[in-house]
Length: 131
Image (cartoon, rainbow, N blue to C red; front, side, top):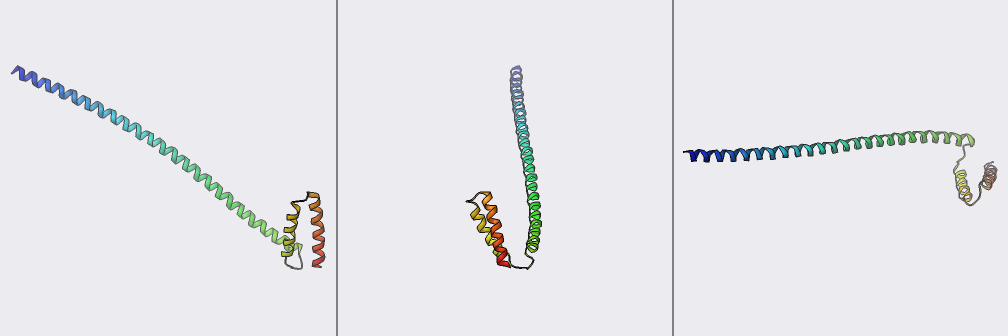
């Protein structure tokens, strides 16, 4: 009977040791999982922050583009107005535009002084043609 009691005590101590080992292993795995989850959370937060910054940057760019488009439309209105004022007879400015294009191409090979002089002469010639 004492031997059976000793045998039961031996099995009980083995069971307790097994349970303690299991509990330590489970606790360690839980800690590792929590650390990994925390690391993933930090990565997700950093990515969310980066995404938000990129979206804000994109919105700023879109805003600037829209602002520039509005300015360009306004400047185009001024250009049309100046074209009408500079050509009161209502004649088509296509000839002027073609002449200006040629002048720009020619001016690439000349210096600024010659370009200005050539432009003045061409404007005078154009004015004579229109009269």
